[in-house]
Image (cartoon, rainbow, N blue to C red; front, side, top):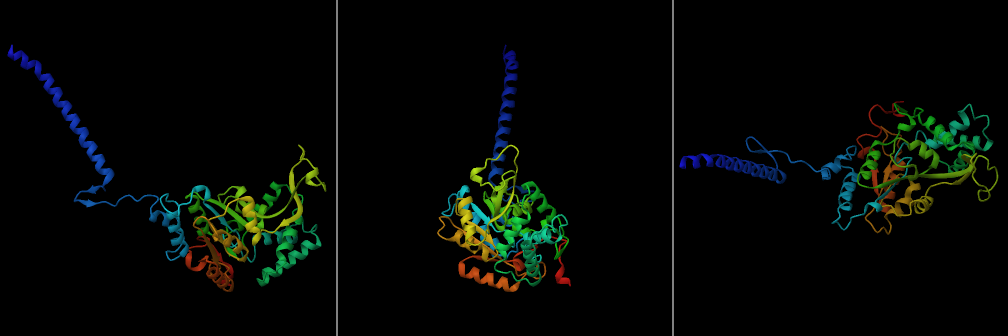
Length: 385
């Protein structure tokens, strides 16, 4: 009988041992996982491995501005700014809906002098070179084109050219549908640059500044382009390069009408099923200086916390950004001081540096702050002549 009891107990003892072993194994695995989640892993020889760096760490933030030199003031300032305003425990925290940045386009995001503005080159081409239009160009348009040519040759921009140019753009492209106008802009955008080898008009964007836009967007900023260039031309030039909606690209304005509207006032005309929207031929406003502040209030309805520009036409926008702002704010103005990689102008660059000192803006040196401007394979031609 005793032998039978012993035999009957054996399976239970075996089961108990197996269960205990399994429980012990589970505990060991749990302990290992817990340890790995709190301390760095080790390799044979008790050499500690490099800990994983968080994507939000300072190093990762700095890498996001890799095309900026380590001595660039913008790089260190913007990195520190971003750490502070994205930290909910910081007094400088800015909620995502208030993280608004505004950028000028010409000379801030893309080449300004080739040997002049993109929209000035576009108008000159339309009036003086386009076989489908030059014979139809008005005397006023031709006169403006000649003034633009002189500006290209001398580098001196006449005070009244902005308004003359705006009116000529409106009249020279009158009657186009928005798709036709956009296609025209993009066709000229694909033409080779005048002053540079290895680059088209549409590729002449400053790579370090595009990196800033991406950096801001990755930190929940809403980015606007506020340009003195015609709104429709700005949209066509930026499309495919700057990843912002068309509603966030704002520029100078010309009238838009319906195809069958004629001279009827918009208050007396109703858009019909047979209509399309076309350019109306009337210049409305040049989006420079105080007009940039006005358009920000009208179309954004909020004060930006960051502003990026390059000229006196951006001064009002820069001051508006940093004046009486409820949030921490900053303004960065580019100085065209690179004569090797860019069609720079040291006199203008020095004038901008002084403006930065006087107004509390941060100066950006294209020469000293950027490791590249347009990337490999692009050469400023006039430097080699």
